[in-house]
Structure formats: structure tokens, C-alpha cells
Amino acid sequence: MTSLIRYEAARAALAECRRVDDVMEIRDGAERLKLYARQAKDRGLLADAAEIHLRAERQLGAMLASAKAAGQISRGQPKKNCSDEEQYSRLTLDEAGIDRKLSARSQRQASISERAFEAMVENMRARIASGGSKIVLSPSEEINGARSIMSSRQEPDDSLDYFPTPPWATRALIEHVIGTPQPRWSAWEPACGEGHMAEVLREYFAEVTQTDIHDYGYGAEFDFLDEQSTWDAKADWIITNPPFGDKTEQFVLRAIERARIGVAMFVRLQWLESVGRYESIFRDHPPTVIAFFAERVPICKGHWDPKGTTATAYIWLVWIKGQSPRAPYWIPPGQREALTYPLDAERFTAHPVIRRESLPPHDPSTGEILPTVDSLTPRVDVEPAPESLDKTKGAGSIPSG
Image (cartoon, rainbow, N blue to C red; front, side, top):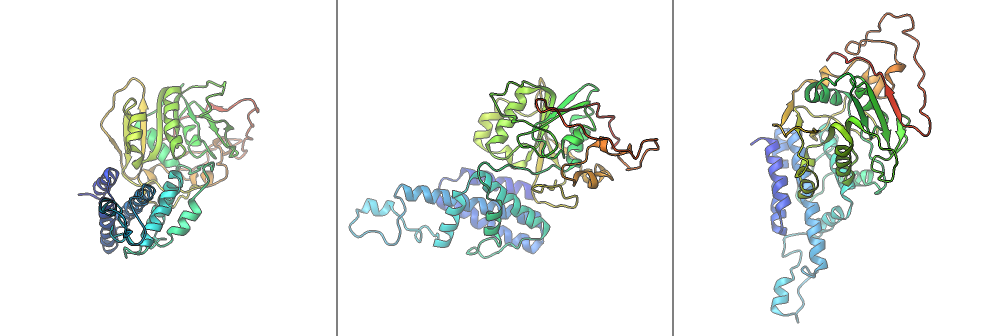
């Protein structure tokens, strides 16, 4: 059984748990798997096991809080004057095999928002992948640094999610999944941030609209989910790395409604799960293609790190109107190296990213400056009018892979 299959099986089993002892069994199994992963020096497996362990504790905390609210768990010894039925139905934590530290920790984890918890999991996996996080093996101890991770990544509900997509991951979508766009096709990046994805789309599409709910200094400020907006723009393709939480589902549904040809969403592999998501999206709008990366795509908050690592799996979900679902597709390994261009480190680590027209004419695959008279004279960006959206036309020819 591969690591991925084992991980998915554990996630599925955890989702089906309805009893505390079932959750505890999965948690204990994750502890044993962590021990094996450390001995095998397998950081990918270690990250999977640590995530399952954390998710199990969060689910345990939710169950304990619910049971306490319903009066099913009591503190200390059962009351002497209670009936046999009441005494049987009210258990102590000790009788359930749960120590007080685990109870308190799990209920803290259950109390934070889903968005903050997912950010905490992402941070933890990144730390494991980079070797910057030690996983404590004793079942009675917490993951080292878990409190600091929770503190640093627990954001208010109105906080903005900004995790730029590496440029090579967007190029892989075009080169291996969608294929070469038609000459007149347009694209819209509705969560463009500082331009990491939109600038790559401009390498392929004739026209790219770039918007975001927050002004990051790159695209136009616009709320993609604003139902009151009178702007009814459409594009052939809507391609983005959507915000976390419930907004992801809203982005997908709105994009499917607005795109003329297709939609591509860059999401975590785990986003395929949940009954609610099946009922709200996948049942009526099954994706045309699920494209898995054979290699991991490192994501960092607030910037792109060309040398970054991760233990989290990401995928492209693609909907093409009028086309039936196809078999899952694997983006072959080696794309990070093949589709990272020489000038990417300079362009995409800038804040905001450097636009293509601000660079001298060059060969994208080699970075070689083309011999033209004005090759060293950068163009000046023209800010869009306040009442209009940033729409860039004539992006240029498609670069060779």
C-alpha cells in the first residue's frame, strides 16, 4: 500500500468515525506510523501521519465538547446519588482513556476556525518537509512547535489568504493539461494577488483580466463574489488559486457560471473530499479533468520561494463546458526544472511581480536578451483607470517549453 493510499484511507476512516474510541484508534495508529516514518527517514510519510494525528485530535475535541454539552461526560467520579442508568451514560475522561492534557489540547484545536486549522496543517507539513520541525513520538506530548504554529497561522475570519502559485505550476497546466490556447482566447485571474499566476497566463492568452478583492499593486481591485456588482464580465477561461475555506466552493461555482469555455482551479488534493463539497459542486458539476502533480508544488504564504519544499499535494481541477469527465491525469515529473525559466527568480520574487513588458525582449527558455535597438529600455506600466478593470491585451507568443 503506497503512502498516498494509506493517507487517503485514514482520512476516509476518520470522516466516518462516530465514536470516541474509533477516533482514538486512528490517532494511536498515526502515532505508530510517525515512529515508523522517522525510522525510515520518510518525511512525506511523516507529514501524512502527523496530519492524520492532528485531524484526529481535532475531531476528538469536537466530540468531547459535544458530549460535555449533552451531559454525557462528567468530571471526576460519578455522583453517588445518581441512578444506574445515569451513571452508565455519564463517563469520566479516565474511563474513556483520555488524559486531561489530551482533552484540553484537542478541544483547543476544535475551537479554532476551519480556515485557521487548515493553515496550521499546511505550515506543519511545510516545516516537516524542510526539516525545520521535530515530530515528538510520545503519545503524551504535542507536536513540537504546534502552539507557535497555531499562534502564527491562526488568522481572523476576515484575514486575506495570499499563497502565490509557483510560475512553473501554471505553465504545467497549459503545457500538459489544457493545451495551447486559441489565438483569440481570453483568461481571467480573479485572485491575482501580486501577479504570480496572471503573468504566466499572459505568456499564453491573448487577453488576461487581473483582479483581486485586495489591491496588491498588480491588478484591479474587484470582489469576484460580489453579487451586487453591475460588472458582468466573462472570459473564455477563468484560472486561479482560490481563497481558503467556503470561498473556494463559491469561487468554483461563480467561475463555472461566468467562464465561456473552461475553469481551472489550483487546490490541495484533500479538497476533493467531504460530503458537503460533493453535494454543492461535484454531484452536479463533476470536473472534466483531475490533474495530479507527480512532484510536489511548494507554496509559501506571501511570497514565492524558488527553492521551497513541501509535503502537501496540490492538483489542478479543470471544468470544460460541454465535455464529459475523463480519467485522472498525472502531470509528469520534472516540470519544476523544465518550466522554471532563467528570469523567473528575478521577476516572481519581486513585490509585485515584474511585468513582461517591463523586461527587455528575451527568449523565455534561455533568458537570452534579443538583439533589438530598444532592448534595454523597459516600458512603463500604465495604471488602469479607477472605474475600469486591469485588462492586458496582446500578451505575445507562446514560449517553448
